[in-house]
Image 1: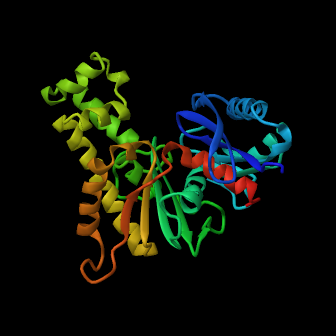
Image 2: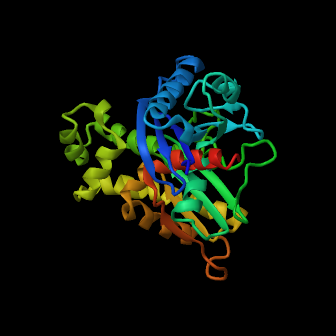
Length: 322
């Protein structure tokens, strides 16, 4: 019997991750590239995607690969043909599906990367069996997706779920999207690193452990370094992650007011902090929830599929022709 494998490609602000995915969500082979710098042309990102697909195709019987799914970190049009805007990449009204279809010998599906991750969690992971779910991915920025009645909600123009660009601080920190005070400026991996680097740059003695971990090189300080320090008991690292958690809870309370989900699933690289992040997030959510004490409260859990959710979901959406 022919296997129905699909290739999933997850394009983030820092990496392009690909996988050859089976019908149970298992990953048979992987490919990985750094995301070309945002100042490069869209064609360079396209070349990187094609390289990953070709590498994965070479690892399989070509007859087994039925489709290729792309999870793009940006606003994807309702018909899945165009990346309208990508805050962290060079895409502006980029006809990505058509360009890739001319270079990849399989049907190509393009969707927002958070939609792809949400579909993976709904099909194989933490949201399985739930009909009303909000998925939030905390990485370079904040991605989001909404599942209602078991279906991904893309909106009339395809750009639903861009929760990271809700304004939470009027006149606040400038965001790559062009506005100020967006949620992702306070509850993302970039926000975590920005705050820690600012403390290092100011010479604060409370970040001495972080300084030692990166040999004094502020540019080497990353989210995983801060998370590792927090797990090792560093109080400042824990405080920084807790602040991200507080902002996460505030945003989720706003989303609960709008959508009333049964479940929030938190994924992305920052979720590796686990309860150091989710504990403060749950507390802030309960403090800010409208009608608190008089309404059912959504559960808040960590995603199960980790960094693989985006590529697994992209592959599954492509296999199903969604």
